[in-house]
Length: 338
Image (cartoon, rainbow, N blue to C red):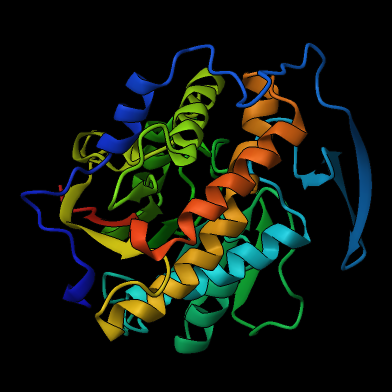
């Protein structure tokens, strides 16, 4: 593991950024500039996609495609590009490894929740050709030319899991804000793991500036997204990775670590530059993806105001003198013998 981007545990504030944003953001955060607010819901339409003989409906809203009416992140081609870059960023943070916790060679069954483009599931299936890899998501935009031991399924992890055989390893990554009841998801993960099985959860947190600016566009963005997510019932941040939340489902926390990832190549450490460059690209792509539906639906912003703010935040994040960064947390838990 690359200790070079580890946060000092005494100074790290795991999940506190979101709380600070909540305190800074008024419950009625308005869009910057003229303060325009939209009294009407965003106009939406549907688009049919064909994959493998199956037809999937995609909701088009503010020129972005979504899997359903509730999940705030899009699932269009632009988002697929961001997910692919984010996968490479995670891999760089992990020094080329697929997971923070080593996967045992004896692994037989693995499950990935929220597989996205399926990059992780495919890589694991190639690394462990004798293991069965099941990867689920609420929509289907994974490739069809994949290893024979990986299986993609359309499934919502918030609903009842119907697997009949337990798993050795369950992987959840990048799903902050996806579930309103993480405790229920963890409870099902615990139920469907083998004894001594592993649950690994990973996520990025709130962007910050090493050289803060008074009334920065980033602070407006963070505050608005936090407020909107709270209104939606699906909080952003690291709350779902808190020790108590995971242990209440029956797990024992094996280890947890947070890495402060620079956004861009401003770090003098060459080992940080690689992850930083990819993290910056993924973050710039993710600003609109994260905020567009949240702010238009829950705070009444106009789409053009959201995009205008995102553009201004991008300008700040591309300034190396401001030393922007983002925390990335990994938590590993085990299902111990009773």
